[in-house]
Length: 192
Picture 1 (tube, one colour):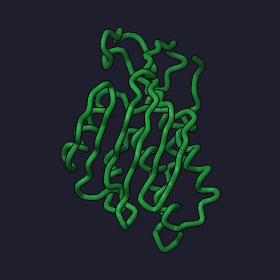
Picture 2 (picture 1 turned 120 degrees about the vertical axis):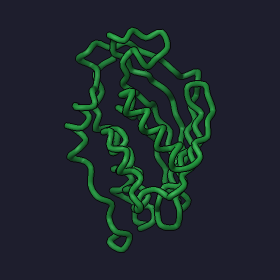
Picture 3 (picture 1 turned 30 degrees about the vertical axis):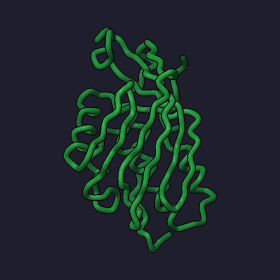
Picture 4 (picture 1 turned 135 degrees about the horizontal axis):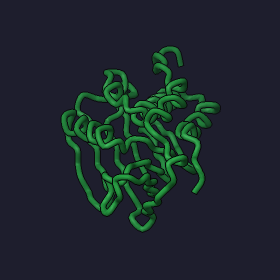
């Protein structure tokens, strides 16, 4: 495996934004893009701004061979806090297929999550790993363009845990260095 480019995270959304004419679609794509950047840089608290996420989000997650429903602000916040506390929020998306419609966004891609061995079964805490998973997602939005929740589905047969040398590992500091310049405020709905 070679070191991936963390800035690929927003490539699919940026490509759609170049051609999207619908103000609604542009608003959803900007929200999706900002959400991804905030999550991967560990700034997840900003995801819950009143113009980004509804007050009572619901997440349906089918990942790591487990299904779980996160129902409400507290449960979703605990999820993001755990990602950041375990340093498993640095993700590079490869080959993302992204679609936007009035109801929301659909995505399928290969997720590459950068983790230390202490957060994976049978991992060596001194080593660096990339967990590769094929994941499909649906993100519904409300009438104001705020995220209602996430529906995340993993294809368990496409899960790989790959040990990588330290120089191929993307740290949170590196992710922030490269992604922070890409974070921008959401445009006001009237400016689209």
